[in-house]
Image (cartoon, rainbow, N blue to C red; front, side, top):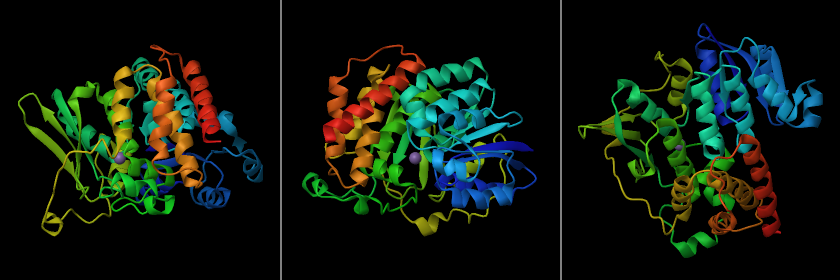
Length: 371
Ligand code: MN3
């Protein structure tokens, strides 16, 4: 039986992870739950799963359930004694330190928090190797690559699929006037708010390129993005002999979440099997970097390496929040990111503390630029 800590248990991934625990009570036991501020739902989860520890990021809300709060609470629960696996589904660079703590404590990591590998990928991967901790990706694309990689053969190239997001068909002019509500209607995936906006700008795909580089060690030239609007193929790998393996399924996070928790085993899901005849047609296209510059920025930041991806991520986090609040327009998001990247003098082998400071500094500066 695997003993789980779930960081972000009231969010979209966290709730689905708890569904998986519900369907496999003999495989998993929840020992820790943490949320940002939704204590109402957390209380229901506590009653049902009886965790040994809880943590609530928001200090006032934490007091309502006598939980530990803030980053201290997150770090404590991420290294909880007796936990085997930490599922990190926090949103934003706040997820970096808990991942680091969990690795140091020797926990297996089921990783949904993208910013961990985008902001501090080299540090986190080095640490994972040092502590012999396996990082199992939850994101559907990386889960697909991880599943294809189980053959153990050397991978020559990775092809990450991309739905294109809700603004696939929009022109540059149309995009200027888009509102958060337009972006929150994603055609294929139902997800949290931040990732839905990141999907609309294709920054999310850019993050996934950097994460793939970190997780699978391929150069950026060997990681391609393919637009595949049906979201049935979740990603593909090419081997030395030009043979290509892909992982397919309905666009639903259940399978990737469960695989990250059950690996190396596979377990049943309640999902209906994929029906290719019903899908009918799978199409592929090149991403348009002119309309979606964020994807290009991510390649650029990734290739520069060092502290640059951290800067890109910090600027994006603030810009997306401002867009959700209605303070800035859709095309201001890439503009703000580019500005911060241009101003930044990259540090090549930053320490974790340097990156965390930089993250705070860039966020503050981006907020100041927004006004
Ligand atoms: Mn994804």
